[in-house]
Length: 464
Image 1: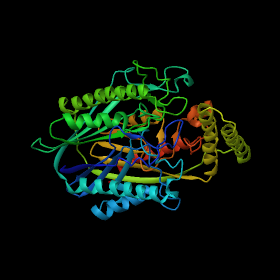
Image 2 (image 1 turned 135 degrees about the vertical axis):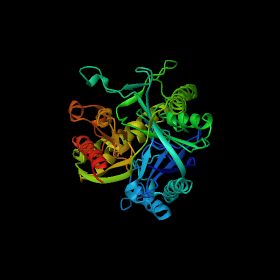
Image 3 (image 1 turned 60 degrees about the vertical axis):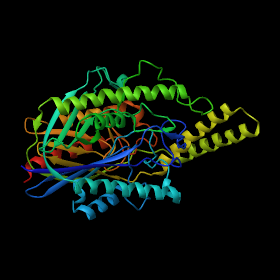
Image 4 (image 1 turned 120 degrees about the vertical axis):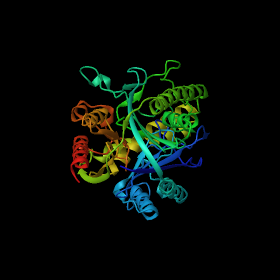
């Protein structure tokens, strides 16, 4: 097989007028930029039949398709621009977010599109994502490729945050997958990294940051000779968090009781983030440089299918509205009575909790279209899922690998629909299943999405 590939990256750091989402307080404005956000893209072509796939990775929380408005589709608009510029079909284009939390609120928890200035920024983001894909496509050159799988030491990086719900050891995924594309002269290289862990080291932080995926990618790009771009594809990280930082107490908030930045905690968080990024980046470099890996051979293919899944069940709205009204009135009463700033902030956060529950209820119970996508590059397949898959689904997809194929799960791809999990964990009442903006699909969505992804794996290898 003869392949060509190209890559590119573009700065997508937001202005400080765009709110971010983390824990509480939500939807604050950033106070500054710690490290820039980027979109990166790789275009890979099987030269003989001239079939191309394009992967766009974004330093973003997740890109809900309604962020431009309820009658528009963000991913579809990005793909349409890319198709116009390159001729690559929409089904061959994947848009995947890292899920970094100190990034703009693109999950549509609040409707940014109602503010004309914020809508303009969102449309500019759309245009940049299309631009970086077109640039990657235009820069293609002849390459060879290899895929290497390595592992981090168990217990050194990741943990299952829902461990108490398992009767035995809770599952984690310690594997790192590295796809390396390189020209014959060895003067150009791009790597695509797959790893599963929530980027929440910098959660609830008033400074823009790409979290550990950004730190790892930046380290690789700075230190691997000839490297053009390092793309990070988030795996099935729905219930997987970074392990605790032994150098500081992770129970301390990045904000004090007055919602002012706790600079000591923020400083220590960024230091830990750099350590984790360095460790992951060095592992990626070692895997790309030091091991022969498995040569990539075989066709380029793509399939994308939508399935219809049920919304999560929703309660009657009236009691939640009454509680929100009462909490809102408590805020006003505290202000009128000259309460301390700390008390007012606490009451505002309590009111905000119910404001978001109402937002979740107001989405309604209409069924949801969930896109599942498979991109095959030779003997490697990237399986895109539109939200936060629990690690069990990623491990099940990887179990479909064999000597002839390597299956790579990709979360947060082509939409952001929140968590989906095994039915037993939904029934057990893990936090991710509770009412809120974090979970839009119902109990059975995870199994349906996995089953479709598994079917697409079969299709990618059986269909001519």
